[in-house]
Length: 293
Length: 164
Ligand code: FES
Ligand code: FES
Image (cartoon, rainbow over all chains, first blue to last red; front, top):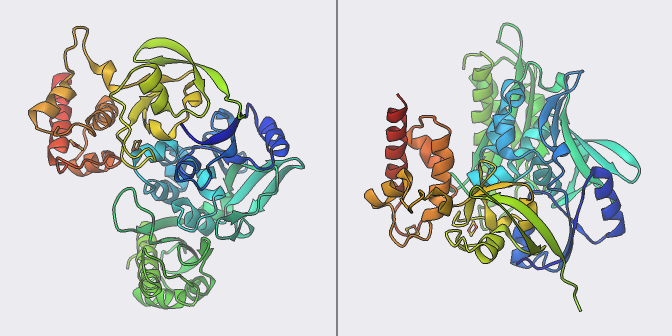
């Protein structure tokens, strides 16, 4: 038995919004791999829950007419990895969420939950930040679209207003077309572990594969929220796709991150990881794009 | 006094349509063990770390300890008990666990076997490394895992050979 004060099961998004307004103290329950565990730990014990898990309309990956990739917020990690659309256009996201927890956790955990809990170590977070994803939320005032750059407002906090619910994550065509991405998760174990540092890089090379036309990078656990690396990006953009650029990219990245000391790893080790992972990830994306390094 | 909320949950368990009233605070583990006496579903960590409570829901593996019983509505659930033949015979994968000494205390075994069932039913051939990853959501304190992977690998090869 869970220590749940009351459980309200939503039958539609509209109903969920009504329930959240009627019960302002209630927590949203998606897959439960965070919320139910925190309930057992006592952190959320005795809370009211609004369960949205059975809203099947919020599941699945599709392509909008304008080429936007639309990921329903309740899509499980394993379904994202298996999705043909993700495999073809945003394979790095499928790979990143394939590193969350273990197989059973990837069947229950949802991308919406992974982004709404606002934690910096979420494996989906850095890749979505690196692709400038857009969060679609629905609430009492209707639908809002929030660029991911404005989504994470602090450790464990996201820009959801009272009564609002995230319903989809969007990746626009111009953000993924022509880009290849790579994610590296550094953790102590291969399964059932949380990233010490995560690094997601994607690049677009020139037609002759010799120049980095565009590059974007984001980290998890290099700061309180998943974050972009503007200095490293500015350094490598327009430069030749060569080892020299990769080295400079890694050095520039040190100006972008501000990791903490924690029992998982020291600040110094995380700084080292930030530099090393950025270089490895950039090298791999250049290779995936057909460049030679 | 706190008012207990109940809900009728109808689902299919090991091929049989069933229904029962559950306390909405119950996990699926609670329902399977207490209401249906399916005690192959173990309570290990109860926080989704160990896989002892793993069952198949609509063909995918889930840790039933972090799954609300009310979410089972309309679902097709399979537990280890469903693998037995009509006269209580063991299935090939259960027998393989015995043959390979993949069972010691047995606490992790039902969970492992249900993941093995999901793996075997894909009909695909996996490398040993792929099997390790697919089985990585389970903890075993006794066997050291090698024999478990052997049992799954051998059964996979036997089934694939039988198909040819
Ligand atoms: S008892 Fe469910 S995962 Fe451990
Ligand atoms: S056989 Fe004892 S935990 Fe696996």
